Length: 434
Ligand code: CMC
Image 1 (cartoon, helix red, strand yellow):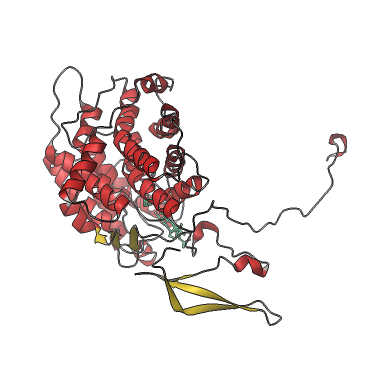
Image 2 (tube, rainbow, N blue to C red):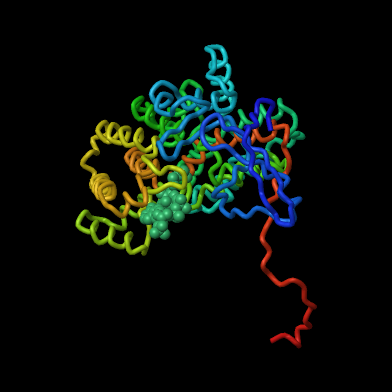
């Protein structure tokens, strides 16, 4: 617990029988739910049981807060809507990592440090070329980020704040380069070196879409929309991939390895893979005339409506509202507002928002429903969506990893279990087995 953690006047008493009543302290949240401190619960001879962490706070954090019922998201206390309008992904990164918005000087220093460390070791290009051309970008990304630790063989001490700062900046700087390399490699296109005269998002679009043959000028409106996608995805408190990064990092492993574990978790369709799944779903439905039959299948629980529902938001995901507007803006600028897949998506959205099945279950569109449509309009292939999510979330993963290590109560994570297997039995020789 940090110095300013408030203990509430409330406590929770648990009666274990035989007159054994134990009182557990309650700690106060600034906003949101308080927590009961069950760390000594094990002394009772029992564990608390909470698979999937439905009611367990695994850490104390000051970074991001979500009010799922109200549909609110705050980075360090700032509403996401204000940040999306006035801020940028790199400024948001500084905020998430340092706790405060940067001054002009801090912003300049941070952005320059990121923009000037975006190249990868030349040997890394040969490493990359070991992948099959048709590898999934997430498979390449996870391997490449973990392997990046091998390119900085100097000793890394996770307890050293300067080492942590260098690793954090290195990763935020090189992530766009590596994500763009995944795309270029899949396409058989030459890798494009980063350009330091461009901002973070324009530079990423340059590394994705430029060719050595002619100049490439990123559209500022598209670059701004892309930057907003990154900012909106930068952190989302203790989601599955962030918890994975925290757990992997809790062993003191290299942060690039911990982030690689986060990438593995993010890949799944219930998490970061959802925006890719949304596009696959839209392609499978194919035509507006198939929507009603498809929706019946969802209600019959044959499959899920991808891009809808959220473990925490039981109201509109605030990121989805911003993305929805950005989606219209981008399609308008690109002259793609009549895109049949977009029209199909809007029909699904309308039906779902008015249908009692979705209303009763509080299933609203989430950010992934729109971000995939925007990225597709920008010319980014579906297989790249989750890698771009990883590019954005790297900031949050690193901020959470850093916070965990700086927590005075920091320890390796070690969940317990309810064991229901055999108690004890003797080894059976192979000839005696049935
Ligand atoms: N389509 C249809 N029914 C759904 C959906 C959906 N997308 N999501 C949940 N339900 C139903 C589910 O069948 C269940 O019904 P019942 O109570 O009758 O059994 C009820 O709603 C609750 O479902 P749950 O699986 O217990 O809810 P959860 O909080 O564990 O799941 C979720 C959250 C995001 C995994 C789920 O809503 C889902 O699978 N959505 C589709 C995938 C998706 O869009 N994921 C992106 C999440 S946002 C990105 C991120 O933050 O990572």
